[in-house]
Length: 564
Image 1: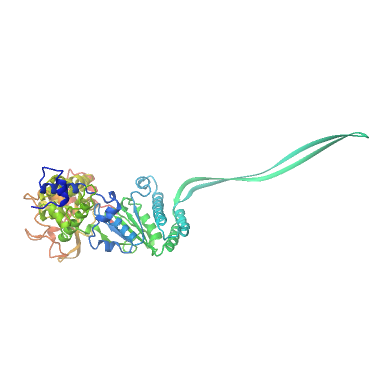
Image 2: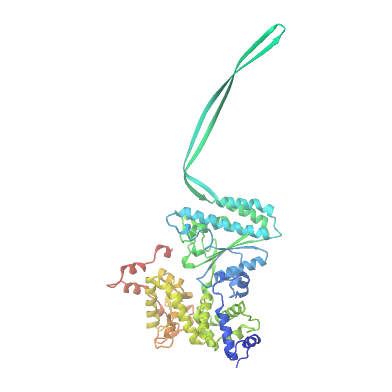
């Protein structure tokens, strides 16, 4: 019998009819129901409190190198960038966090295909620079050790460089020359009386005033275009950084992938030309890999945008962290600490005397450790999915501890509500998912498959983005296929949770070449892995049969953008 912590015993006095254990379960589940599910919905202090460092995440993120942080929705990009902002501010630096969803008119002009790409791109550059300018100004006004007078001129030049407008079209000028003459006639008279008699005097006069002048009128006829002068922007930043030294400026751009993909290389080009060359600036970009395009090839070796590897690093992918099948011990440790920190941050309940450690919380909230491991496995390494599954499980448990059936029912509900709904919106992706489930689970009794690294299919990207398949390991090689490498993908827990208690339940992670042979931990080199390889050509051939929609058939062909 578990003992009720003091705060729970106090509440029990006002909640008769509950046993100690029921009351403990009730209050714990109520705390879970109050968890905040999105990082941007919390205040910054709570975000810092609830952050869990999945080593070496913060070590990699805190480097001064310019960096792209990849990760699907819910993997913690926003949380990590906001924590980094707080970390750098406490170190005395200037950290500007920008949510690209709120910069300028992302939802309007940037996505309006009726406006030319140059105009949309220029407006995007201008709005982004204006947001950076505002962030710098806000920090400088709040800082006590910075000279506002010395920084005002370069800040003004930066603002001017982002707000230039030019007129493309005809300029009409009208010039008028002329002169005018004004004539004034005057007449005056006088009468005087003296001893001699009467004298009368009359005077006439004429006055001419001549003036000349010229009037010039100019009319501009054309279209107003916004301009960003890269040289002026770069020089303004150089002057600003010189006056800010030794403070470093960190530019953190989150939600990069909401920018229309055709505009992303142009904003990246601005960063490369205006910000990246300066030693006093560090740029971090949070993006979804399948929705990001940083580079456009140009003529004679030139290019537009940022070249990954040469201009910026991309050595941090949050999708590589916390998947249970990759490292079960690290995954369970991370989610145990994450739950405890979020639990302790709940404002609505006084939990100051509740479970005092993450271990105590897990033993209180779950029926057994296996139930918590099932929860970690169901989360598939995605913190947002973990919190949503936990909330649903707490609803189902009510006054009981959370058990494996609660976890499985919650995982099924969350899969149907969030992930399957997203896939259903794309009929082609849904068809591919059902085919993979039938082939991998139905015929091979496995949970994972291999796909050649050099195969890029838009529907695989769509399933990965929807979090119904997960990347487990990259660049796996086979001894019998030298030079050919594969990526290991696993199906989401929600795809097969209904089958776990049936005869069709998957037996292992990957099928071996021998019957009833399975590999649970994928090594870097396999002796033979032919049965684990997914053949997408068979899928496309199946949709070439009579009666199959030709539109679906065409949808399976990778587009040019996905191959680049």
